[in-house]
Amino acid sequence: MTHLEIGKKAPAFKGNDQNGNVRALKDFAGQKLVIYFYPKDDTPGCTAQACDLRDNYKKLLKAGYQVIGISPDTEAKHQKFIAKYELPFDLIADTDNAIALKFGVWVEKSMYGRKYMGIARTTFIIDENGKITDIIEKVDTKAHTAQIL
Image (tube, rainbow, N blue to C red; front, side, top):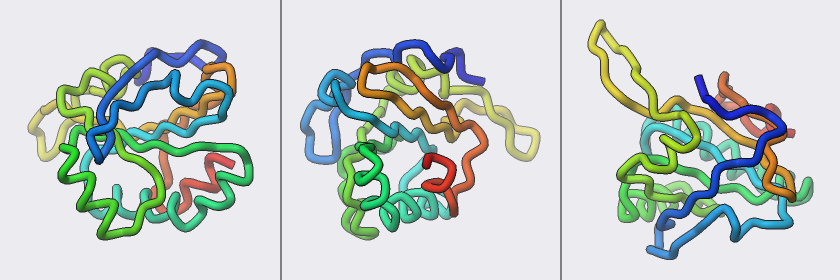
């Protein structure tokens, strides 16, 4: 699905977080980073995934990871999602899908025979040097932290 490979540099990106602050890959230089792409705020699978990461956030930090979520939702929707579920990490509003395209996760999907474009739920683990160390394409939304660690 994704055209990126383990061992390659993650593509540079920048986008606004829920507060309108520009966030870029270079902001995380020297840190390990979990970037998770998900389809939509406040839907069952996306909520389960975000809450699993929230519930295990201290474990992820202890392992040296920063966490950032990216979806096509707006900054305002991200603010509501974060407030509703008390998410401790930032969410980037990729409303034009530019970041998803760079990471190869904006793909053709199919539901009930109807084809449409959407986010392929995918997580990228990036090391301190900006290299991809893992790509999780079969995300277990209820046990995602276990997949990362």
